[in-house]
Amino acid sequence: MSDERRPMSLSAAERSLIFGLREISEPEHRERVLTLVDGLVRIAREPGCAETQADGVPCGSVHSQCEDCARVSEKVQTLVAGSFPVRPTVPA
Image (cartoon, rainbow, N blue to C red; front, side, top):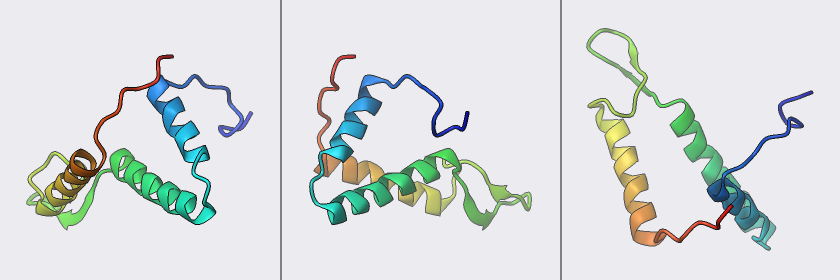
C-alpha cells in the first residue's frame, strides 16, 4: 500500500487544518494557502541553511545561531502571533 493510501489517525488540530483547507471556496486562495503551508512544512521537516558553518558543514538546525534561520523563524512567529490569534482546537 502506498503512503498516500495508508490509513492514519489525525489529531484534532490536524483534522481541523484539513477541513479548514477544504472549506476555502476560492481555488486561487486555496492554492496559495496550500503552497504556503507546504513551504512551512518543508522548512520544519528539513531545517537547514545554505550557509556553511565554522566546521565546514551546512547547518542542519533552525536552533543554531544562523542569522537567516533566526530571521525566518522570527518572521513566521510574528506573522502567526499578530495576524492569526490561536483558536481553540476542535475536540477529538
